[in-house]
Length: 247
Image (cartoon, rainbow, N blue to C red; front, side):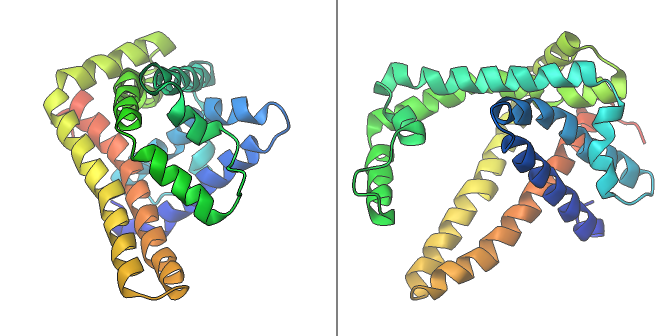
């Protein structure tokens, strides 16, 4: 689906992140409004995929389709996301005493240079307790992620209520846990391992500062294509799980 209409999907993705950035910049309320609106905006990708499946073309205006549907059920999903991920991040302190949180939200090192920041990050992430804390945090975040995975689609396509959408998504994900684990491993490999290897490969072979420019030119389009495909996969997986065999 992405290959058939690359530019419209990239335009939709660009509009999605620009909208979130603009909302996040709002004084005081931005940090709360942006996460709550994410499920509403994500409906735009579902609408675009639904349209393309029926012979249409994704359009930027579809990004705001969620505001014309059951907003009262979609907005609380954003609140669940914000609370669930915040609790998962906070849970890492139980393992590493707050080192990972300090890396994310703490003050920069006194010697505020890129080298010092990189060294601090490398030292913190190399700590076995921090690595264990990150794994624990990911496990704590899993129920929230799975409950929200297909919840927007259930709200839009099946007119499910807020709580019913969360239960339905979580139950379906757990019922298909083998496919979910396989999917997660593939996403991790293509979304994290591959870009990291490409970045390392270019850093070794190409001298600075050209390696940074070349890495941006190679990795950024790849990540954009990958993320756009992930949004399409949300729709395709919803169809496969909740409406198998339908044309």
